[in-house]
Length: 76
Image 1: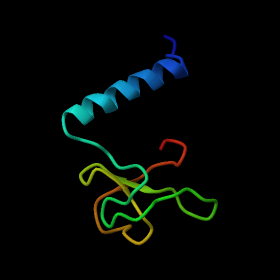
Image 2 (image 1 turned 60 degrees about the vertical axis):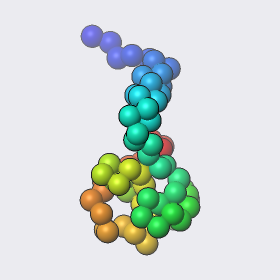
Image 3 (image 1 turned 120 degrees about the horizontal axis):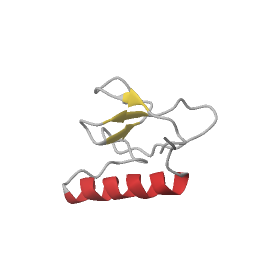
Image 4 (image 1 turned 180 degrees about the horizontal axis):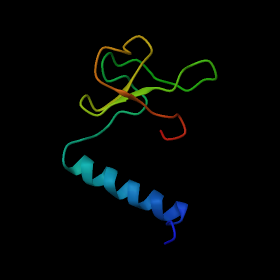
């Protein structure tokens, strides 16, 4: 079997996020879901943590406060 192309995967993920948004799940990718601080990529920061239950990323100060898993900056 062959893997779908990158553009096909982009369209698929985009459609999934749109469906989730219609269902009420609007993840926050650049603002901390715990305190509202900006979460920005930089060479000295770790990959952010993403909390499905809270609906987005966590800043450095809020790491460890809720159940979350690391997510690569390139994925965001």
